Image 1 (cartoon, rainbow, N blue to C red):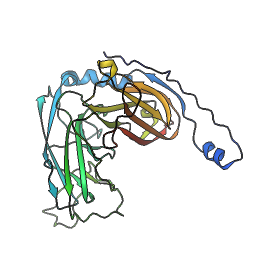
Image 2: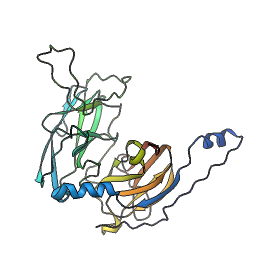
Image 3: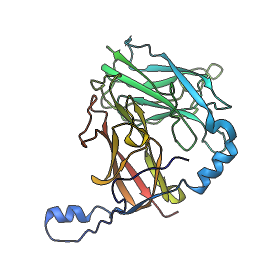
Image 4: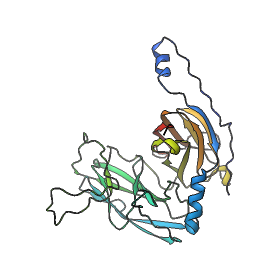
Length: 311
């Protein structure tokens, strides 16, 4: 088992006091962070690992078939098609119909939060993609969203959308993983809508695929009840080795803009002690002096999550 070396004490108590000024009133409206404590992998995840057997030793390799590298796409709907190979040991993306969980691929447009792609037998759609340059990043994940970190698992391509006709005012409506009928088609020819999602307006940063690159994976979205008791921090790292693995880089973790720890080994980190409310989680790739290593703006990424600890 890998161990994570910490360079900073990881318990962060924050105490907010009420006061009459507008600034202090704003702070008072922010729920207390609580005391974050690094913890072991949750027992329920450890049990899942036992049940999965040798899948945990798999080394899945992805290949992006569509969009092609440097392609120009005359549509706001970008089709994503992947091929999986490698030493799979039974690993294959797919959603369990009862639990709505399963192995899947994390699909990231530009630096937006990932979308989960379960059925590689059909294309995945990035809908309402704005005109301009874009990057696509993909890597395989376990049902609890922990990424596989073997060579070849992560892939990235750049492409361009031109005259796609996207609607900037269109909201990011869900379609991810849902099997919805196309009401405009006759009943006998109606087909399920492919997995995918309407994307927020974005363009690619000036990313150099040969330079150190941090890809934010988890946390994401809402955490409720038992799922909020321990929350995983996970990311994909390209062209960089952390100090605990023999390199010179670290990943700085901040919650609500407060430094929590320096991650020194490339592995998921779990924390307990989260308080209810909306939180921001930031991951930054830094060098040996603690200076941010820039790569198109992607090496410093903030996500907002919502936590409700009560059932």
